[in-house]
Image (cartoon, rainbow, N blue to C red; front, side, top):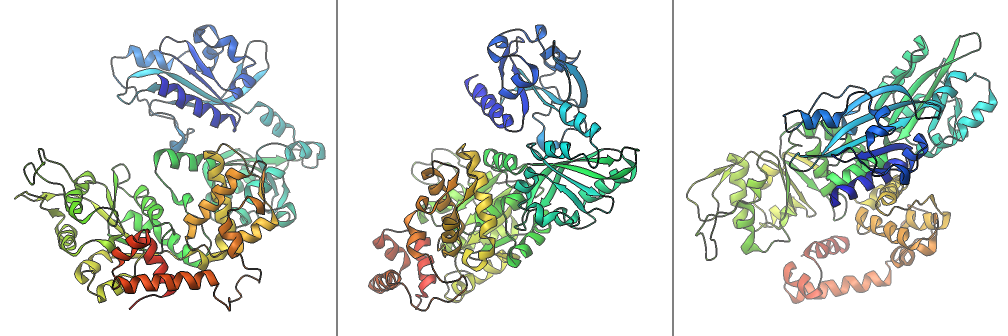
Length: 593
């Protein structure tokens, strides 16, 4: 129960930020925990209800007459899985046995009525034994009452709307924005001056998108609508996931004069789910650069296919993340994605690691051991740093690509697998093929769908978007909120070349995040590297003189390469760096024979 309690505690903390109440109940109907939002909504203090029976408290009112815990325990089925109503978003359900209700009025003892939405679900261990129950609920009473009373020109209520912690905007019947509150500015990145008077499509994309159609329908017939998984386009050009509600605005005489939209930013929730489950979505990779947009446009089609994918790009550009996104969006998402780093495994272990071995194949092989390809059966295998794969293994990989079968080490029988192959490299594969370092026939087998990720220095316009995205993720993992970056610090971040690409940007921001004790990252919080190499001339102006440190590094690398007759493995070992790092530096200084 310790792990269970920790997980519930983490969930309660997360949902507190969204003013969502959470109560957990033990198998014996004793209240185990409740978060701050639940205390505020029910009027009960945690210390007064913990350990007490839920049947003797307000939880009975929340759950109604049907106890999901009793239904599950008393039924002879091990697992209880009724259907979840469409009002509960599929990605948000707490368990397959959850039961959701769109709304209902509840009175907690002497307190006023609450209009709530709720999800009630049994809780299970990994072997699907019932260990309790959870109730998640959100109060909409005050907001609902406010909307019922709002008048189109009531400035006092607009002041109230401006101070709510949910994004709100209003439009006239023509779809032009007439009100934009402070939280809407925070979520979208637009200021009021940018957005007032402009079409609603400015932040919701083209006129045919679902959110715009829902708002138009609401204005037409006056009926409220919602979109559990909407999307807006921020000022930086990046999409972020939202939950949206749409209501009609009426004049005193009952005429519909426009519409109101509420928006809740779900990007933090998506990033948290991605980090916990390692299942990444299109929202985890951002960029408005044309090269990135072309990749985003074809990703859904690539993910839906079963073709082999080759991802090329310098170290730190996000090849691993892109591979995970493709897998998560594919029909194989429910199966494993197995990663093999071809540069990290010793050559004498690579074959047995990739293809497995049978008992007696070599000294110490006292049992059959499946390889990575067998572990990935039905799913995806990600071959990272494929350019470093030894030639003998390339021939065996070619057979897997052609026939989807191979011989485990020491076996006389072939093993068939159903896997999708995604390969990645930071090397120029065509050059490797020309130098006879990579089989030409294997290269063309891998090069069915080729995606090339650009260096970060080649898409500097994406920096503000990436910085915002990374800071949101750090806010979750570090449980600290950084509100902004000072102009001086931002100037440094925008002018640095990032030889380590996005990975280096992440490291720089995490460093600043840890050092910063306030809510604003200052220049003094940044690590030495970007401060040392920052350009003071305008972005885009060519650098006339190579920095002295780079000249020295280039000479040192060239000397070591010549000493070891251009053997990258021996050179990297002598320099005490990874082969991939050596390759990146060789490309940087164009050090090739």
